[in-house]
Image (tube, rainbow, N blue to C red; front, side, top):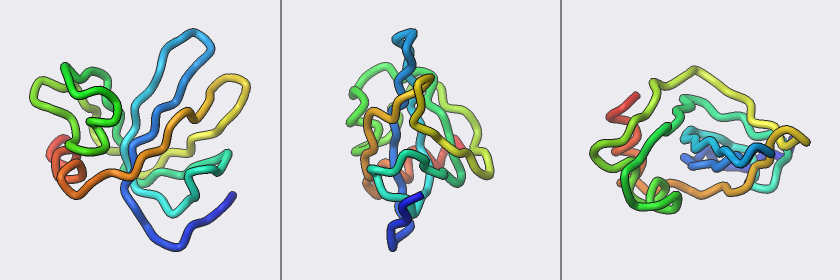
Amino acid sequence: MAKGTKDRAVVIEVLYPSGRASLLFGWTTDEATANVITLRKMQMCMYYPSGGVPGLASAGPPNGSTVGKATDEAVIRHSERSSIALVMTASAAAVKAWEKYA
């Protein structure tokens, strides 16, 4: 597992062969190119009404979003069942918006 040097907040899009996707937020020291990324304080956004996936990293979930409570830790793996499609660093404004759902 490739480790970075700095703890940072990220939004990750995970794609599945069924065409479904998971949108996750959390804290990691792993590199964006790693096949395994460990997220601390991981949350999942099940629904967001606007802003697109990049909006979740730049502004956070908008009003009307459905976001799960934070877990202590989750391990996201790139495999034949799931693909880490996108890893975006979350802005300070996005972190604040995500944390109101924690």
